[in-house]
Image 1 (cartoon, rainbow, N blue to C red):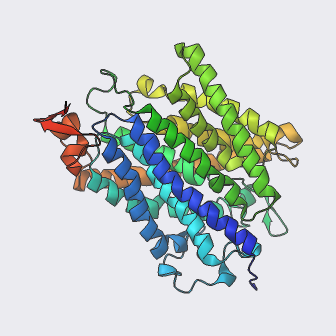
Image 2 (tube, rainbow, N blue to C red):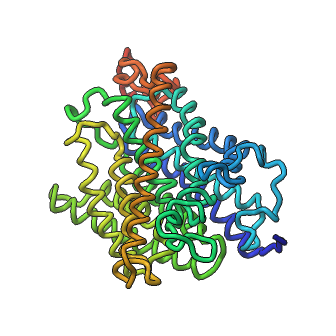
Image 3 (cartoon, rainbow, N blue to C red):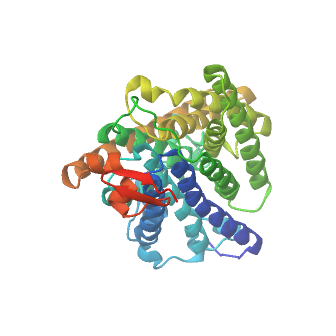
Length: 435
């Protein structure tokens, strides 16, 4: 394919990549504010650690595994573009939009980074930093890159004539008659990270004092700041996934906005009825729930459908975060309730709300709904199995948990040798210095 540079689309994708990269430091603030003061630096370091590891791994073999020549519908050839060697603009995944190959790499790398970072919130306060760093590099290789290839790289969960949908509903003009819809990462990012978070939370075990003593967020302004940065960066995430500065990007921008607004309001109403208060933590969590749910659907719905999606996601995610107390798993910062549930809700509701005669509410039949359910289930099973096997191997070799003394006394001081605030360490306690 001949390549012709489109400077406008290229500028938009460079800006979008920068916005998505900003989301991971934003996530660090969001998660950092939600943990206790003795763990905030460790929590933020897990996000920054993900940037360091995944940023390098993606350039070495991650892009090849995601978008290289298909191998069995599961992965791309890992060493086809090793270190991006041999990658040309003519082979750019966004070549149709006039966007150079390296800009496409930059944009996709930021998605891989934040997906890994999202998992960390489920295992806060108790995890070895060294094990987390090893996990980040291996998990992104074994779970994220293959799933990205399956959904976006022409693999088994795409519209490929050899994919799941084509096998069930046949093909038209060489592609699946019913194309699976994941506009910006409901399966690849949120279900993938959410089910990994659930598996690790169960495997690593509960924090000391879970459900017995208060573990309140230590800095709610940090949480609100983090949610604001995530919302800002998410326009690169969703509108950037249009691949061009065009009407689809504009639709994704508007849908992202209204779905997030609706989810925040839905969460606050649910919280008010359940607990008697509409809280700042609930508002921030509702924002993220809406962003998660609209991610797979941003280019497939109209604004009214996006509002409906947002309200449903906000209410269901608000209810889902309480499941950890009912079932006894310690998902520290509600990654499962927000990202797994929100990702499933957004992916599945496309089957009802997609326009252009695809969704049940807009003149379609059940075929789109069926394939949306199947790709969601496939992502759950694939990521769950990979994470379980990797988690067990690391548990047997490196171990996942810090010592009880470090966990109780403060993981920041024990692991990183520093604290977030001006403190004096006395024994296993961290006491605020009084001047």
